Image (cartoon, rainbow, N blue to C red; front, side, top):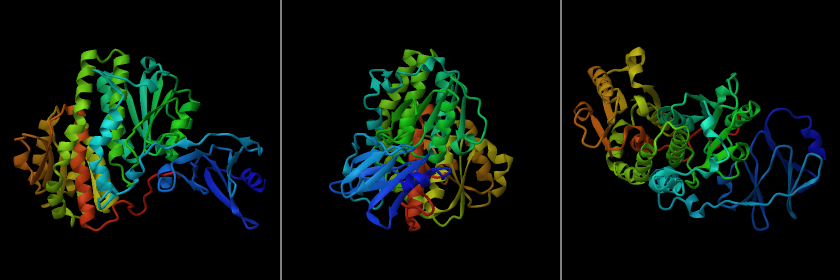
Length: 463
């Protein structure tokens, strides 16, 4: 009763655990706009803001909803509503393998999760490809043919996956797409309505800004689709439809296999919407599906660059600053590569559209300045080659990601990582691999805490 009375005076978002001096063996927990999950063990109970924190102890969880109280004590766990009435909610069994939360002989979880991407991609695609067609049963309740525009809302690496999705939705579904940081769109005044599909991407499903954007979209009457890795998470419970990544737990703070899992789900979504709208023929969908079916093997081959990337990373670990550049479907990977390097190595890195270098950033270039360029085959290849010649003329040292068999960029680069040939709009699946490996090996060479970088959290549950 005292906790309920106190909560009535609180404002804003919170997740609280309260212990009274006269009842030290009882914890009362409550939440508002912030995630809270109870783990149910054998004669013990746990509180956390995200499921992965509970995996070493239990896989049976109960989510606490806004306005509810969870009472944890010697007798177990009970939920009550704001009036004190009991709430009955069956526990949810998290189907993740407990071994996935162990390093399995790897030095770091991040390195393990980079290597898990071929299997994780196969798991994401499983059951969603029917012959040459895309099958997304989770979207059956949405009239995607009525959609006139798409808003993609996310944060961090998920935002860059959203930028790739923008290219797919525009090319395959012929829809106008806006990609916005959740922290910005929630304070803006976006024009949303029933014909606006809002796609919310959050690995944890508990990102505070993304959840606020979800409430904003629902208030405007816009249909919502969540893309998340966690069954039962807040974004999954709040959206009209949810597409789960199914990549298993990601323990490292930075996104690796969840990023490529997001790409896979978003590619399926874009192809599904394009076909339902009549913008993609069955033959065109079949080509995309064929490319996705082959992707786990292509990513496996890209991972074979590890030793080569490690050697180059060791040479550049002493650098203080670096650019990542790309065009078209390479630009979001440049942004993601720069973010990865910043997150786990603490080195300064900036990602740019390569064509923007001449509008200011090129002033930073000097002899030996490293530039990581995504320059695989496709419509922007010749322009990327010209950009590489520009930076090379200033003495910059180019590290290029190219397509196997490349002869145009390789002679210009100090180092070139050749990834398997795929269609240009699916290239992000393979081009991100050398960027991930490069960031990892630089950070490892510097002795950084790769799995738990300073100042970062896996689930950003605050605004």
